Length: 304
Length: 256
Ligand code: HEM
Image (cartoon, rainbow over all chains, first blue to last red; front, side, top):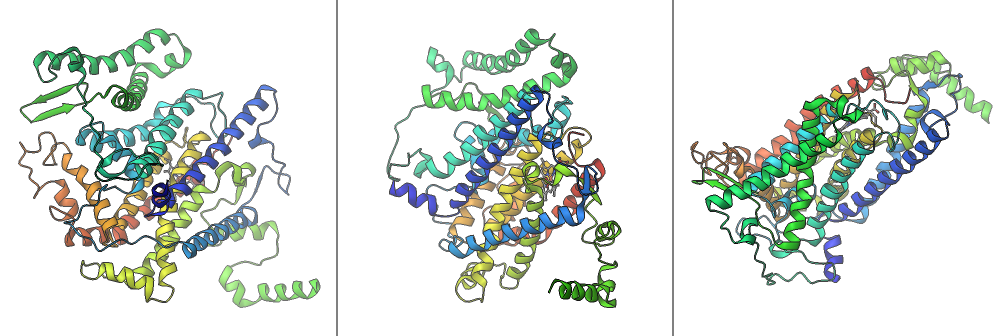
């Protein structure tokens, strides 16, 4: 526990606590307003965004000066006060002079990259460090072109876009915020998970033998057969994940409107995203190392 | 008393000096409200009139505005920090120590720059959550969302490059861990697929280009310094300008 408190206040880690406050406040603000709006719409009432009284000139639009500018001014004063108080009560971290010969254990990337560093535990570096972040960025950029639901633009709602919000929130809360939290507070020496009440013991060794999927049925994962089975499972996961919902839902108005191309991209990104927690789960429960060990003379290697 | 105050304000705002500064008569009329925005360089990125719900704190949470304010604040404090900082491995660490112990107001300068940087990373993510939750990325604002994602990345990179500048164990190893990933890039990293076949080694791959060396050393420091203090801020300023222009042109989101 002492160790946890120490960790909480060392380095930049207090930032994560503040990040946590922001996340909770943001979730509360959006979900409370979304639920309120959904209830109001069900009763045929005006939603929050439409229920403000008209401005002083009897118009729904009001002058930026003074009504907006004064709020910005107040917000700036409040934020800067908070920031200066923070700067007065705690000092920015500064450790020992940089020493390339002394690797700290654990070595961590800046906190906002720890979700990605966590991926290194489950995937090869080029997948964890290069492919996953690139797919994330492209996927984020694609959101407006994939979400063609015209409803829910410019107001808080859940009922009108449950899938969009559910998916985004899953990614944000489970895959981004909580993996960062794990990386900052629970990953100790040797990149082993330490619970808050455990001491960070640099000599602790966790005897953990992870095995590849096909080894569970006694087939060498590097053999040709192992390769084929692994490949079938991996590719099959995507093929089934994309096609089965399509067959089941192809008459659904949303899927019809999406069209086959948009649908496939959405489904591919969704199934891929869900693959991450699945792999994490399997690693922790049945000590799965790789599903598919695919390599060819060290030129191509695709261990997943 | 009130009468006196009114008189003073009137004398002040009608004076030639005042009017030469602000280009308008300040009298609370509609005309004067309009001119306050369109007749002022710093105000004119606001619309003249704005939808009522758009200024509600519960709608935007002020997060985009705060991110921008943080960028301005960091530019200013960063500039002041540059006066005390030598970007070479001999001095960098001691300059930062000096800021803490010797420079007048150096401690609060450094603390607020660092905490502010973290805050900017936080608020840009929360701004994104807000834009998502209000569905503000939907047509015609798709492209502004794309620009936003780029701004998010640039904000991460700003913070990341700044991390190294203190030249302490924390910064050096965070950058080492972060850039190690680049080694595994396909084709252009020496440990990535096809890297070796394309002649990549630790001395010519993408990580070498980022660090100016095969490990985090003096060249990496000067590279981080230039990206952090000049390169990325210029790009962010440019893209933020386009971002704001698009908010104006696309119209602020709302149920109407
Ligand atoms: C340096 C980073 C950024 C700055 C300074 C910035 C600033 C702003 C500001 C001041 C606004 C006006 C409304 C508000 O405050 O919410 C805005 C709106 C917007 N931002 Fe950003 N932003 C940034 C990053 C992002 C990111 C990461 C995204 C999303 C991926 C994004 C997407 C948008 C969109 C779509 C709007 C229009 C919102 C509407 O009409 O309701 N921005 N931004």
